[in-house]
Image 1 (cartoon, one colour):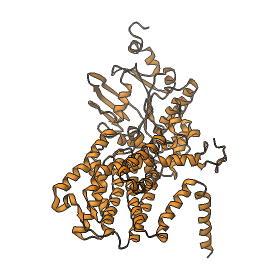
Image 2 (image 1 turned 90 degrees about the horizontal axis):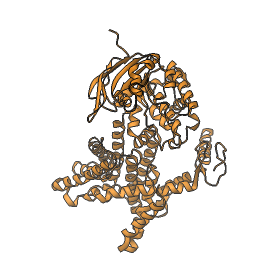
Image 3 (image 1 turned 135 degrees about the vertical axis):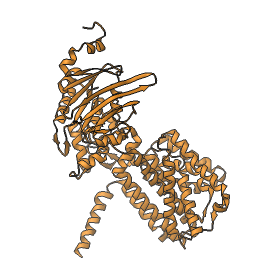
Image 4 (image 1 turned 30 degrees about the vertical axis):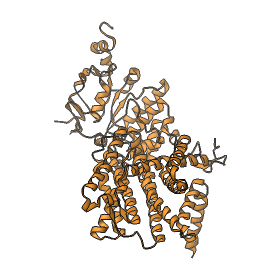
Length: 346
Length: 255
């Protein structure tokens, strides 16, 4: 009994001293809880469907950020991983009869293979050249899909695959929990020693080599990790929509990911996730003005990027918090002294 | 036959029609500090880049502790124990200074050597301490001045705990007082020992430098390059009297 109280007190003190002191952490906590508790209050199928899709795309946007934002390997063909994951999961389900909990990770592994296949020839390229080369890969794969319609369903795609779960609420929970777990893992990766190397590769690859790091290995690692997460999101998408079609490989899909990530702030992980949760429902809200929907969307994105070039969420975070000039710990913007080292802020 | 520590034989490299390094041959011992001087464009930096595998030589061989290193990847060479600094500093500008050094500490060689150091940050901090910028460890690298960037380069190279350290103009952009300090720490590094949690084997060094007055105090031996050719090799006292060297620097009749 005492032990339980000890851990409860410890949890309470962590929440009080680490979470409640920073607005960004409070917001993240509320976000987690709200997503998990939402079905208790409403079971509106439309809302649940939108949020499920939003969660799935949040994984995709965060995985792009891991590869392009952190490691600096500009990938304009991220739909490749998404499409390979979706098609892989759909084919395994339809032709091999594997249930969704098996096909989705296997679809992710198929996307890892795709990541290695495009990663190895692209190792020497950087910047614009890499972006243009990667742009071509999903288009090539789409050509292959159309070339073998018996196997891939051609333009119609593979339909009639198993549901993610029996009920809507269960599908919602699967998507949301997978999203929260994978995004936490991605955030942890970027926060680890590997993350430092990823950052450094983006800054100056030659200097990383001269520090004795095998950059080839780390770049391929970034490609495969990003491919794995994007492939899982593709698999979830296929099983949720019950169809894997060529729309998952479209160029517009690749660019949507880039727009989400840049809108939220690249090299942050939380930025792209937040951006998807703002922009994807926004597209639905703008439906009331059907004809000008895309135009409105473009205007909003442009305005945000014009005034907050580092991304919306990084901007918000910098407004709400400031960094202690001495110990670099973040503090609420209202404080006058640092909460750790008591140095004067600004 | 005893193998020497570093043996360079017939190393050549051309850029188009320009022979930047032409058939350079020399060897050095484990306990030496070698100065590499020459007029601008003599091929000093190219020679160092050939040794670290950043550039591929057209011909010749570089043997380090009995192993051929021409054709190996840069990271392999660094992990064998040759660390280098860049003449034009290449820090990771948007990363904190400590993270710049942690990248070096994460290399397989540094990880293997520092097994007894539990925390990576502590080891990186000691490398910064050694080069004298530990007080700025948490600042972004873009806030550093030219001189401090030089020190960061040195800290990054030292953090891999090399056997051979290639310093490309370590005093460039430093004030005379800072140069004195840097010269002292290079001397101290060569003696070897421990700097906090960082262990120094007392690496052999090749130093490219233009500030000869300080260079002379540090090095045991100097080699002189001109137009890619090795024109002189000897102790500092011999070099200043060598007629070829005077001619290369001052032109004919310069004495």
